[in-house]
Length: 322
Image 1: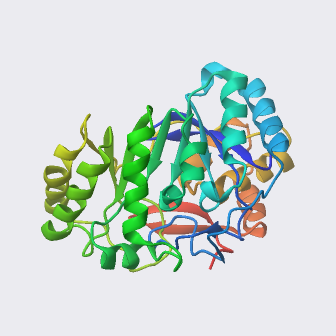
Image 2 (image 1 turned 30 degrees about the vertical axis):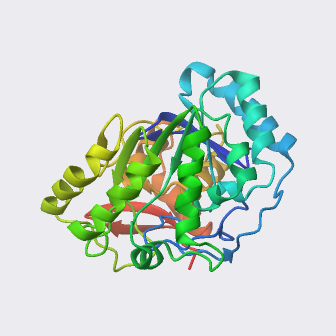
């Protein structure tokens, strides 16, 4: 049973994405941000110190087993993510080179971008195909309100690091912008963000809205009018345009195991990193020929997986994260 590798899971941006989690597992979420919208809940291990949480060889071995099981043709991207911020993994460069050289599958890193001020981190990321950094605000006050960074993170230095990375990086930069209603979805804020995006020169901009239960219950989705405003203001600053991904992802989740116990464990490991809708969990159980769904759900509850309603949809989420 894999510990650090999960999926492939359906991604609205990356297709069939095989997740590689290089941070300690929940509930010990390890990050230098404590974003109000995070689907993994609040940060417990608040740090800006990079560490070798796990041996590189172990992570690569897990990827190897999953690629052989699933098949290369069923994976669009090897995606470095984390139960927190993946660039806090000290051996990121070795991990990237190892998985890229072994299978020739495109590699993506999803990051909050905070550590791009560090030249060593920028160098370690040069070999990826796509990097997806987050910049949710062009105003420091709003950045702190939304992302709640650790005190070591300086907003201007962080943005400067993103600009420097663009100057040396030959791959694709797909910026991510999480639109939070009432905070970063007004014209003055968006105009400041646009000015920074123009300096970073991303290939694409993906505008997200909270589609899964966020860390803070007060987080709101922008109005349709404000979504149009975001698209109009930010769109011109990306080479290949802006993409609104405010709809739920579609596609199948790969869940390990044939025996009931293995399926439950694998399902729980996936939900910890990627909360799943009721219909997605039902589909997995149907594909696995599980008849007693209620019994499976009861066992998931014992693993701290519970149902939570958000935007009129029911999600299975890991609950030991407050």
